[in-house]
Image (cartoon, rainbow, N blue to C red; front, side, top):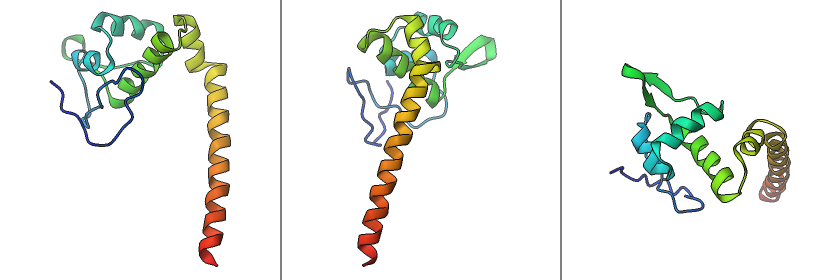
Length: 124
């Protein structure tokens, strides 16, 4: 069984367990962390170029934290939001990702402006 971290991360829909603070995860661990069977993970590797676990001895897969987060994002797109494989692929790499990035930049600009206002108030 995997040990939870106490980073206070939001597990999101489906109450997935927190991702432990370690460097590499086996396919079995990722399966448990993401609620997806190992054969599905292997299939998603073929369908999503963003998902590239490190392969070592005997072609064993070792996922890093960013891979686990990507699996959770793919799972969310497919299972929670109802995207098809092709639609999820486009969302992750195409216009959907650009729109999300644009929205993120806009939110960051707004937060920065608000923080600068707070800083000015504190300086008075």
